[in-house]
Image (tube, rainbow, N blue to C red; front, top):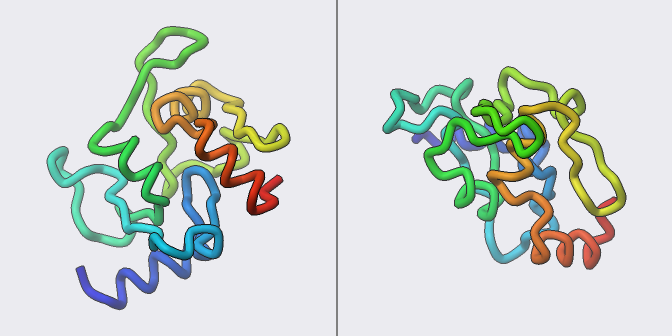
Length: 129
């Protein structure tokens, strides 16, 4: 992937994870990663519209998943898509916790484990929300 594409993705995301909103400044030892929204194994490519900035936790949890089970409806539901979806339409903050407002939001919170104990500790230590 070209350096200019990586720079574009980081700048577009304002140097924060497009899933959990973790800022690069709160992850000084581990750089936020360029993530394929539609993984290559599912036909996704390296074009900027298929790339998102993700913290290591979100990137590892999402892996090659495209969907998950909504904990409220038990229905198969797509994950949040940072190029098609607006974060505020699917999530809100309740203190340190990210709350899913829609089936996409709830499913993404669950699959990416956005409120794990480790993430809550980081948010508390860095003053996030």
